[in-house]
Amino acid sequence: MASTLAADLLRRSATVATAESVTGGALGDLLSAAPGASTTYLGGVISYATDLKQRLLDVSPATIQRHGVVSAECATEMALGARSITGADYAVSTTGVAGPAEQEGKPVGLVYLAVAGPDGVAARELRLHGVRAEIRAQICREAVSAVTSMLAGAGGGVGDASLGDASETVG
Image 1 (cartoon, one colour):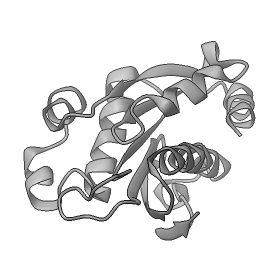
Image 2: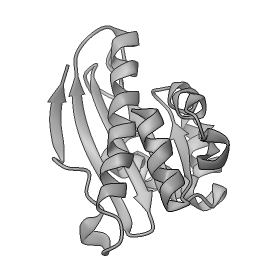
Image 3: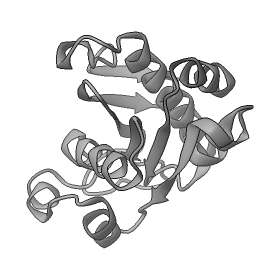
């Protein structure tokens, strides 16, 4: 999947960046392993700590207070922040709970992805199942799929900045 995304990005002369929390760098590792990655993947920010989300990715303290770091709003601001600081055409963010325990009163497996691109930003809620490593692997696959979906709809405005269903259960 990451190879297909890299090829799509290469065809469009487009780049991608990451803003990761729950995946802790695994998404960047996946994207950088694909052939052509040196041309398409600019890099990313691993912002596991809340204050790094604020300082590096410009996530608003009000967003965190109102919605928490495990939220579509936080994922959206993370993706926008990564796109802004890297200059990438697209940026994808991951935030959620991989376990073993809940966070902010939110259950294990609740994850939010967001993709920011030239035509807007879109977020997706996922409810994943499995142990921590399985959930993190699923998140990476879903994040690659989300960028691919946005690329497929590229070129027509914010209404095309879709990631499919707003909420889905996977795994």
